[in-house]
Structures are given as C-alpha cells and as structure tokens.
Image (cartoon, rainbow, N blue to C red; front, top):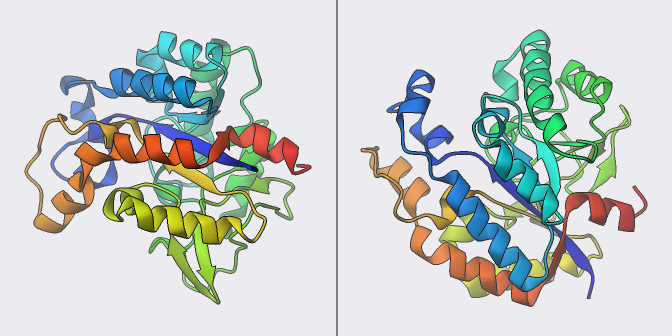
Length: 275
C-alpha cells in the first residue's frame, strides 16, 4: 500500500480565522491554551496507528510550548514552520513576511535536531503571484511549501497551479492539499472542515478515487478539531457551523482514516517520490 502525507497545523483554537472578529490578537495570552493536550492526543494516536506526520508549528506556539516541539521530533515526526503570528501571507508585504518567518524559525530551529525545511502559510494564503515571498522562503532554507488547497475560495481568480506535488520555477516543491480533480473542478477532500462535514464513507470514497491517479494524498488537521470541549465563543451562524461542525466525531474519523490508509510525513513522502 502506498504512503500518503499526513500533516498537522499546530495552533490554538482561538487563532483560527473564524474567530478573528471576537478574539483580538492582543488577547491571545488571556485565553485558555488547549493545543498542547490535543497535540499529544494526536501523537498518541499516530503512535498507535504507526503513522508519522509533519507538524507545521506556529512560532507563537513554540515560544510557549518548547517541550511539546521537542517531543514531536523525539517521537519520530517532522517539525516544519507555520509562520509566527498566524497572519495570512497575502496580507503581508515581503518585508513583513520575511520578519514573520525569521522570527518563527529563530524560535523553532533550536528546538529540533533536524533542518526545518517545510512551510505552510496560515489559511493556505500564499499565492504564486507572491514571487518575492517564495524567494524569501528559499533564502531561509525552506525546501517545500504546502500552502495551496485547490478548490478553496481564497485561490486568486485565474491562477493556474497544479493540484499535485510539483517543483515550481523558483525551485521550491509545492505540496498541495488533496482535492479530487474532476476536469477543471476541484472537490476538496484533504482535511479541515471538509473532513468534519462529510460522512466518513464519503471521505474514504474520495480518497480512493484520488489515490487511483498514482499521486500521494496530502491530508491536514488541527489539534482544535479533535477538541469538542473548547470554549464556545458567540459567532454568526455560518461561522459557528463552519468551526464547530462534528468536532465530537473528528477523532474517531481520523482513527478510521489511519487504519484505512498508510501515512508518513511530507518529508518522507517527497523522498519516496524523488523530490
């Protein structure tokens, strides 16, 4: 059975875009921190199912939970970078983007023995049109980017990007989150809200169809998505549904996914495919 790529975006429940309005950045340190416990729960699950993963870590998280980052690597997983302050790449100038990346790397790199060579932008917000941002990634030792999720609404109109792992002109390897391609239509099935919304049988069916083309599946999840007891902040109905749908079922669904498919870190999957 081929290996697919498993990834975790290590961030707190209050740092997601759905909560940007009611929770200010300035108040982050006043809220209950729950990501450590949920991340360790994921680590235990991955151990039990024989899976390894890439953990895209916010510098903000690593600054406050350095032992957790050391534990992620000690338990056989890859540590990559998710920026420092969960600011979308599209909202930052190249100078701001570089400062954010370097701040995160200065915190994360000393915590691990391996090289930090993967990057994922918060909210999959890095566009091919931001060429200077990619140059900054390369100058800071980043070898691959996983900031593209085909089918999401934040993809710039008219942008043409391969939905599969590929090397870009700048030399960085792009690792898109898996979407099932039906002609020019991308059906997202690689994690996040889509994984929580769809019944498991539908996810499994879409995965099997996607895997049939010979490309590895790239899947992601957040620690807060297996935490149904997180505080409930008043939100508009649509945002509340998007954030909370099926939180109580996600852990069991992930367990089934890890039984039905074999997963390794992005670094391992890229090596297996010659990147």
